[in-house]
Amino acid sequence: MDFDLTATQILLRDAVKEWAERIIAPRVRDYSREGRFPREVLGELAEQGLFAGPLPEEHGGAGIDYISHGLVAEELSRVCNVVRSFYNVHVSLVALTILGWGTEEQKKRYLPELAALRKIGCFCLTEPNSGSDAAALGMRAVRQDGRWLLRGTKMWITNGPVADLGIVFARTGPAGEDPAITAFLVEMPAPGLERREIKGKLGMSAASTGELSFADVEVPEENVLGEVGHGMRVALSALDHGRYTTAAGCVGIARACIDAAKKYALERTQFGRPIASFQLIQEAIADMVTEMEAARLLVYRAGFLKQQGRRNAREVALAKYFASEMAIRAASKAIQIHGSYGYSDEYPVERFFRDARLNTIVEGTSEVQKLVIGFHELGIRAFT
Image (cartoon, rainbow, N blue to C red):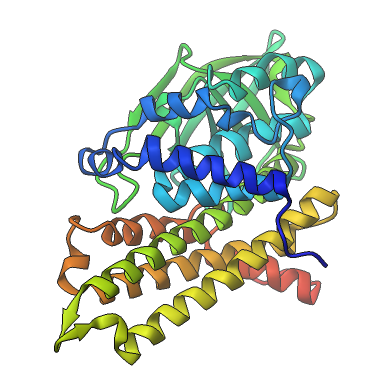
């Protein structure tokens, strides 16, 4: 068992760290304050090839491994969880899902565009009345004259208002039947599609989050992703990808909290000495570091299994559950160490706290991750 990164992985990690600090860091507070989507930042990152990473070279990618994919998410989130969230949806949920389930024609058509960020992707599963119970979605797709018509509403869709391509899940069979759901590739904007930006979020204010309403939006037959009626298989595999990079991103948030807390503790003096010399401050830092390192190992384990092509739903759920909860604890401790200053956006830890909170909800809540873990341990599905 080798815990060391390869020279190639270290080179990529350091490159992404440099890009994040040079391109994102100087602007992140302004984006957060203004609630402004960082489109120009994403464009500059695309010029560096950031969004090509895990895709094969024949589809415009760089063919990086899954550990490296996680390292990219960690370094982005260390500076800005909004950019990491964009990466998560665009690359993990959309591009990798098309790679796994798309036809050769779909891959040729869409993957190079996504890799170069000529198209932005979104993942449309959640609805106003369907969240954790994803199979209960109400959106309908009706086949008519060699095409599909999509009718319904999707909610809390990251990248939704700015996306050029969406993976949209709709019911193609009667409610309660299995199989009954199908995944579609929907080009945006489209006649009959209305998109509304959701404002007033607790955190992630610069992320583009939307409500998407479909009124007989036409989708050609060739844009079915996977098989008709097998959409939940597509959704679950996509969520495993998304949960992995979400977990890696939470490690990055915790690292940022630790770095900020250490810097402040060494500079801030009380009772004639740096607060870093106080036992309870050192205890808090020790707890943060220990939990961050434990989360990172869970992420690496999940990434290793992904790279080997082995089953990883259990390990991804473990990593996502522990890392997302850990990031909140790290941010809370960082605010406490900063005292009243930590409650102001003069320091970044209040943003870390607000942005971290969402990660226990997206890609399956912490409660859902516990059910996934419980099923793998007990072999029986919990009564929910």
